[in-house]
Image (cartoon, rainbow over all chains, first blue to last red; front, side):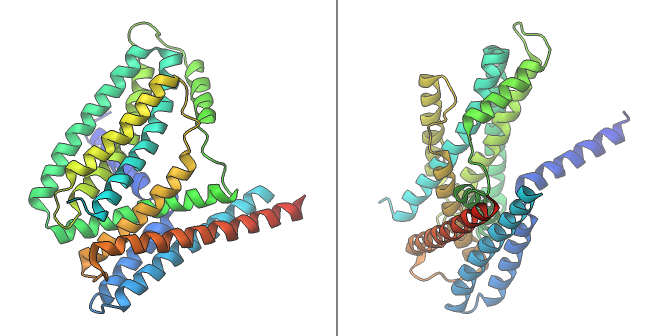
Length: 79
Length: 254
């Protein structure tokens, strides 16, 4: 294996490792959290709205993810 | 004086570290018993050395070069992703949609795989070394990420000692238990611990992410306890709902 290919493989493995580590099998969670971050940033000026909306969005995200995974597992069990 | 958030931080890191240590110890035990202890210990020690270097290098770099608000935003975001991942899996396990984490089962599978592999089983065994190195490094990465995050993202930014002590306590208790019973720590209520850690990581993640970008939480640090109560209640509600839903579907299919 050439030096260039070895370096490319190492860089690729590094990013794959961190992607698996941080995103895992739930890309929806990672994307959802980034959206919540954006919304909270936009609302940060409001003392009431920012905390309330952040909490509601986090709870909605966990509910959606559990529902989505439960539905997928139900489908697998039936199949 | 020790405040509530410091206690919560200590408990979170200790619990998370205990869970990760339980998983790493199962791998070490399987490797040690099937392939020999010498290379297993060597692999684990080298991994611990790598983790120590990562803590020192990353911790120092973060303290010296990254502003606190940026650190808190990034750390909070990562912790929130991490916490929600733990929480999702824990809820699915509690409701029957996912099989509970069983250390005995994992141990048996690990032993079966390692026994099948041929190789030198004398003083040095590269497979035992690789398996224990990888196991300790991967589980340890989660621990050090939590230690560094919790140690540096607090208001004062100097809780690295408290977080490290929490991790040492969590890992220490599990290692002692494993050494005493000399079998997988299947009796540890790992699934409940994961649920608790998921809730706490979600709460700290949400709190620090918000603080990092300028969200004003009412009551300051004391609001962490309110957030724990809110997330705990929501989690219990989800478990109750999805457990009923799972039971209904199971009854319909039988």
